[in-house]
Length: 350
Image 1 (tube, rainbow, N blue to C red):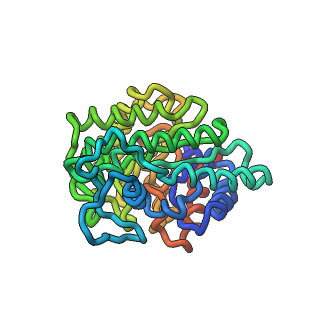
Image 2: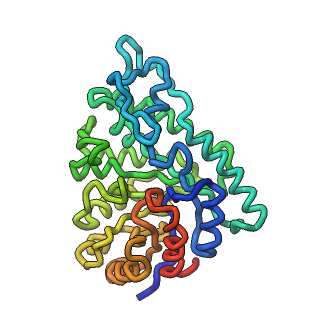
Image 3: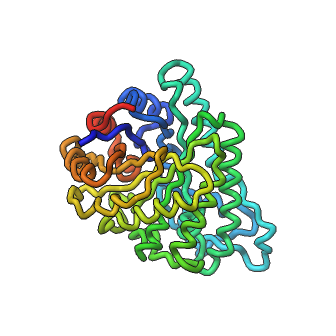
């Protein structure tokens, strides 16, 4: 059995600020990380829940309901285009992603120049897919109306990031989660009811969107996809039966992407160290230069549990690195150091 090579930090890390994340990751995972995210601090601490507030700031967009639905200081009420407003004239204001990325890049660059971060390490920026935000916050009858408006705004944020941060130092990850709610026909308990597609064939529509997201990342910038079944309270919205849909998505993405996908990440539930979960990955057409990361590191059972899942995965997947099944933003702060150490102990350096 070949040991896993390298690790991926999916995105969120429950540390107080970007510098804490950069320093902790660089120290614990020397030689094992090609990219480091900023931990998704501030507005992004609960993934995309802040986006309804950003969308609602645009004149011509209104909230549904009179009473705010507050979560972590964010109002989760749905948004819609107000009656009488031409959606073609709507331009969303800043969504915050470019601002946050540029602020964190300043810290990353300083630490890299100081020798804290390896000079070859990329700065990783994670973005939600437009589909996810629209499914979560647009009223059901207006998702088709609001999706292109939001997509243009998010792509503008991406362009601003790519225009400012040196492309050879940058890596973009698309967080792909609500798409699996559509595929599995389920939602996020207490947050997002079962999303109904507002387009034709679900698989075709999802892969077409993934292809658009891929081609917006410039060739000199690294590109990754985090495939996810949610992380509300460190729980999936539904446990995948096996990797069939994950492998199908990845394979169709590789075929549809107009450019190289540098990495793809798949979750592995804590209880799955059986062959049945991993068998569908045997047929995954993984390109030679694409890294596969399996999210088999769990804080609850540490090194021993990760090694059980590695042993099972290795019977079906010839090469992979390790990660958690989603970000570590919901893990207790005091558990982060041990979680990073677990990554180090179960994988080899690049």
